[in-house]
Amino acid sequence: MSAAVSLSASGAKVERLALSRFTTLGVGGQAEVWTVENHAQLSEAMSAPYRILGGGSNLVIADEGLKERVIRLGGEFAATDLQAAPESTAEHFISGWVGGGVPLPGLLRKLRTLGLSGLEGTVGVPAQVGGAVWMNAGTRFGEMFDGLFALEIATPEGVSQLSPDELPWGYRDSAIPRNHIVTRVRLQLTRSTPEAVSAKMQNADTSRKGQPKMKTPGCAFKNPGGVGAGKLIDDAGLKGTQIGGAMISPDHANFIVNLGGAAASDVHALLELIRQRVGVPLELEYELWP
Ligand code: FAD
Ligand code: EPU
Image 1 (cartoon, rainbow, N blue to C red):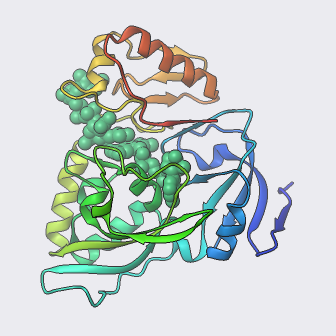
Image 2 (cartoon, rainbow, N blue to C red):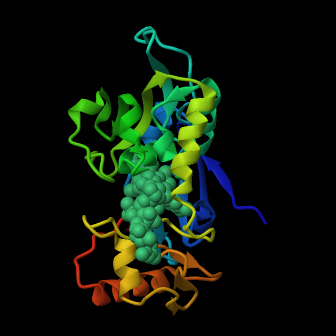
């Protein structure tokens, strides 16, 4: 039986859904999900406690679900305008608005076809544009802030536009406060060729060869500088450790994978074990909801 769908006063779609279907870990209980297509709907959705969900690729959501409503970006926030804007030059391409709800992998495929360079380092990140910007997702080959010209951010107080230079962004950090919603961005890229962009993407993608192909929210911990978190967890002898349906991947120790039927609490327990056994303070990369 399908879940009941209702429309809010401004026309947003409101449904009670299991969030497991929206996370790459495949874990998460129910919440009221608001799918918003324009600013009027988003504004109404933000009038009560909320969380903004992107591609769900960095989240561990409790099996009990969430009491806050969960906002998903659709409609104009999932549209892509890759026409060259008037600010473009012979060398640089400035795009129109690209929605925060646009899947990043599809956007990168379009940029490759158009021969637009700058975001190749983010290849393989299974995020939405808004989530990838909020985290400044990337690899050692590059990150989201390498290709941004402007951002639009919505909060319950209103909508604002800013330049990336106004944010003190860094490694896996945009400096955008939590729950400030990245609704759209404009890209700043270099004109290149499809062949050259493709070669850069393939090069960046080779660094993922050792990563597991199972359900996972990506790397558990940020690299603490110097030695990577994966190496530290590996050196602690924790690869392959299993709690319930979750396991520290034998392929790469900074990935916790869902063997099938994992509970959020299984992942929490593995994170705690890692923290106890690795002698260096580790900062969590993904988010535990609530
Ligand atoms: P979600 O997981 O949905 O949310 C994560 C956080 O972003 C939450 O706080 C959420 O509220 C916030 N958020 C989401 N959308 C918005 C928005 N529109 N505005 C404001 N805040 C928002 N990350 C890397 O950096 N590099 C990698 O190489 C990488 N590889 C990965 C490989 C795999 C297989 C997986 C599963 C994950 C990987 N990740 C990687 C982690 C993940 O893809 C990134 O952290 C990504 O930025 C999460 O984006 P998302 O849209 O999925 O956000
Ligand atoms: N290593 C081990 N054992 C392991 C894992 C790694 O010894 O179990 C060693 C590797 O042999 C290598 C070094 O650690 O010498 C670094 O490993 P890797 O190249 O896999 O890079 P990483 O630092 O572990 C980072 C990002 C990834 C990103 C890759 C590729 C972080 C926390 N992780 O991983 O990002 O995809 O580089 O560029 O910054 C993510 O953030 O979710 C993520 C997956």
